[in-house]
Length: 214
Image (cartoon, rainbow, N blue to C red; front, side, top):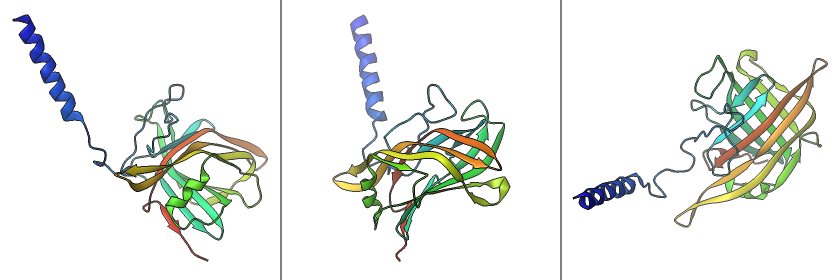
């Protein structure tokens, strides 16, 4: 009797597992974000290279992070420059789900880069560190309450694409996954500000990429 009982339990458990299986092409990679909290900074997403469409950084005593209600990314190529815009919120609070204050915020990294006609060309960013104090590099910051976009006086900083990889489903390219880290130290009115521990894991397709010809 006991053997039959345990056999039944195992069979039901196996059926349940099979029912949870999701096909490879059930969800396009850029439809949603997956936020897995960092072990040391749970307000930030853990570093990943899966195309989870997340980013985050510590901004002084607050956090700049992705938000489900905001399109997280826009990449634009124009005038021999690549513009990578991270759009989210600046928040204070103890967790990703509960916050004291939330303000819309965007950061745009602009740097010289060889021509990208489509999102597929972004694969050339693989293992590429970009010195944000270099010639032609700019960082712009926009905070909702300020109602202006200001170019930062960057004294030190880097935007590092550690890995660029192709996301393929059924032998068809669906997206380019860009994963990496960033930090910025900038000066404003004789004071220095720091954006640190930045990380991003972004899945880029035609929805998030635009090319503007000269």
